[in-house]
Image (tube, rainbow, N blue to C red):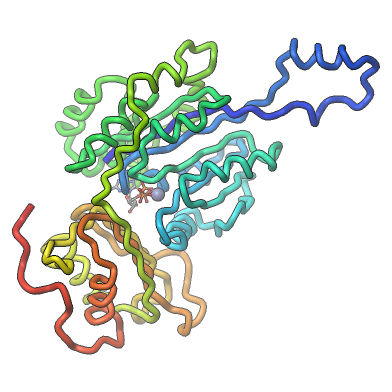
Length: 376
Ligand SMILES: Nc1nc2c(ncn2[C@@H]2O[C@H](COP(=O)(O)OP(=O)(O)OP(=O)(O)O)[C@@H](O)[C@H]2O)c(=O)[nH]1
Ligand SMILES: [Zn+2]
């Protein structure tokens, strides 16, 4: 798993703030050119593998006291937008909506398709913020994202590192290769020995080792204001990109599946459902191939629980947590799940969930479950 960040400086026009009464037109132009009064807004691109902790980091930055007005653009994949938003809500304790202004002056927005369009819209709100943080999908090729910024910008980056899953070496390597900074997260899940091994493998640009969950936090000053691509720092993004082809390398076999089932789930059945998928790996698709879930997120209703519950899964680890949000009334309860992985079949997963987990289940044999798959 590899989370990463990059910084871009996008230009803002100064023209709007020029004094109205300027005696001679040429003087006005001279002033702009000579004094280089261009306001630049730094953009940090946070990239990293699925579940690396990008959203957790952004939530931490949003809620930390930093005396900055930061605009955060959260990544949403597929139709899972509501889930991602709800996860942010539960962690930050604030409701994020389209361009919601938070109490500490930060702006937050969630977007599809990597949020580059959102940056354009953001620029119309200039003056309201002084920093942009953009989360990309865990499978993003940072080269492609960064190239889009490079048009009139200078760029810098940070990366977090986790493991390299099979078939994703390209994205992982590219995320590291293009990073200006690497932040190793989830240190609570590995031994000191494994951590040192990882450090040696990366060798350069390691910013910090942290565990966002275990509150071993990194200092924000390490992450923001890298100025890695300022003209004065001497490294241009163009140079960096020359060493890496910008052709997309995304693993086409990885798909996102999402569904929404009204009503509540029984906690025990939900655990069995998830464990069959993540641990037993005995759920098959139409072709008899075992479904391989890399990332699981969900916002679910558990029978007799007033709170909305959050499911988070990465490879074989998963957890079911209470959010800070309560269900408004029983009629609105539902379970929304997002799966990212290989050989996933939406109909089979949804049907299995309805028959095996949903409260009004009928005891029938669930589809897709006829004997264990060989270990892989
Ligand atoms: N143990 C541990 N868990 C963590 C840490 N940081 C984040 N997590 C958990 O990892 C899960 C995924 O975190 P996210 O912040 O959603 O990861 P992400 O990179 O935004 O995920 P995607 O957007 O799906 O790629 C959540 O359950 C977090 O609570 C950490 O330092 N240690
Ligand atoms: Zn995220």
